[in-house]
Length: 138
Image 1 (cartoon, rainbow, N blue to C red):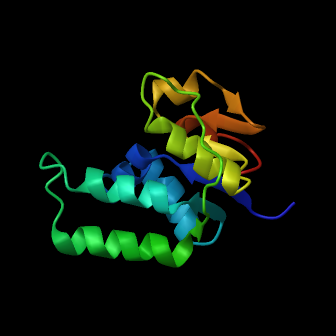
Image 2: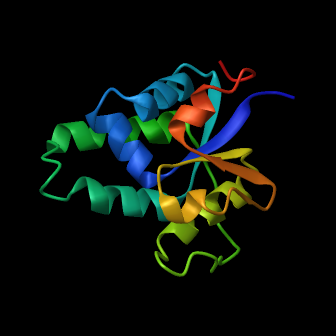
């Protein structure tokens, strides 16, 4: 079946940059070529915006290296469908659009608005912990 394709939501990417938890483990699997990371220009714009939040205190060098690494390893897809599924947090729709455009099998997120969907367009929506505990992925 080939590599497992996933979209790691923006908060997951932020966690991968700043901490050594489960999103970081998943991101490392993408870096190592074990998983295929799907992202989009829309998500990358959101990521840049969020990385600039003062509460994170990332250096310019950290942000640039991280973005360059994502550009190097990820499949970047153009989103064409405008999804309006998550009303409470419309930014979450970008994640759905990205995963759909890239034919991802999983959306990995800690976001309750996305997790309550459980699945969208045939894409499973799971927590980082659930994703890492799936036998076929480890």
